[in-house]
Image 1 (cartoon, rainbow, N blue to C red):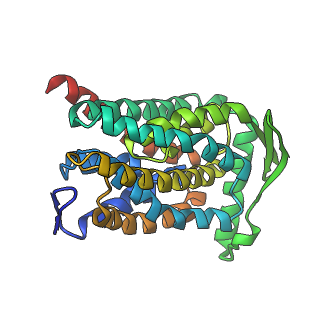
Image 2 (tube, rainbow, N blue to C red; image 1 turned 180 degrees about the vertical axis):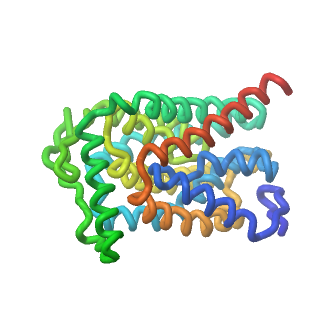
Amino acid sequence: MELAVSGVTVSPWLPPLVAFVISFVTSMGGVSGAFLLLPFQMSVLGFTGPAVSATNQLFNVIAIPSGVLRYLREGRMVWPLTGAVIVGTLPGVLVGAVVRVRYLPDPRPFKLFVGLVLAYVGVRMAADLLVGVRAGASRRAAETRFQELVSSYHRRRRAAVADLPRVAVRRIGWRRVEYEFYGERFSFPTAAVLLLSLAVGVVGGIYGIGGGAIIAPFLVSVLRLPVYTVAGAALMGTFVTSVAGVGFYQALAPFYPHLAVAPDWRLGALFGVGGMAGIYLGARAQKHVPARVIKAMLALVVVGTAAKYVVGFFTQ
């Protein structure tokens, strides 16, 4: 199968399969998998131009809604957190798209950029695992109770989504938002999340991700929010900003006729179909997998990929 926009020749079954495997694992941590799908496109398929970032965001647009719907059904969407992530990230994604097309069209420095982003994400995840024993008692208690509840229902073979613990927002303010998850209260500074999301949006726009891969580890590791409540907000934020990113890359394309800037719609659709199934099943399986196991799997893959790109930049 030949794809004209990306210049890639690939078997039609391979992109959906790769996207399914990646998304199944990463979606359990609130990440669509686009941050690992991009290295696959560059290193395996040889797709390195600016259009690869746009195609990656197209994957998000197609794949993410299935996972978001699952989190909505289970009442695990923290809407104030979701809103703060979207409002902060959206303008940053548009700025990032311009930076990618104008200043990082060459694949070599772009791979270094990708490696540095992945290194940050991986180190943040690994650090959280190493200091897990000092994690907030309320976060550990809520996650433990959630696991116990799900296990109890599963053993009795009558698990009901409606009976699972729901997120309840208790206070919304410009300074701080507070919510409750299964008997424990959590809060986060509104302004800090907005500013962080803006910076993440720029990086995500350049890379070709909505930003969930960067912001989710921060919300879990620094703000000490439980991963079971962060995942839905991160995915929803990634979806909205990816829609804007795809549209903006498409709009930029006529101004750069010498570059492939617009997304490869066929390749993005193939990835999206596999990612749709992977994210849905990952969101469903998340409640059966301990949070530390989820983070360990992601950290191992991310750090390994980051090392490959950073070392490759200086050795080639």
